[in-house]
Length: 88
Image (cartoon, rainbow, N blue to C red):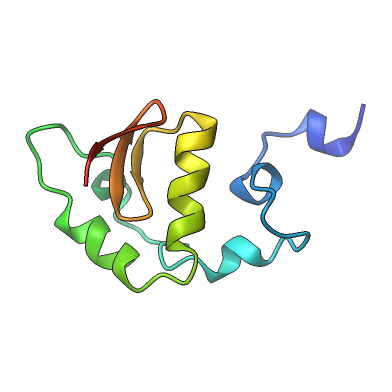
């Protein structure tokens, strides 16, 4: 068993767009303290998260990752529910 199998995987482990683990370090949302903004209720807007995503250098790859891996929440400036984009 590898060390990766023993610990919880991170986005850098899951996203095959770069051999570099530093790729996700470029994400505009990295370290954002407003965690609830990334998982809004259906009746809430997600303007805060969408605004952060707007200038992100990996925005497109982030959305692709969410769709491909069944993520929920705001990814790449769009809201997903189990990998399906529900709000643009």
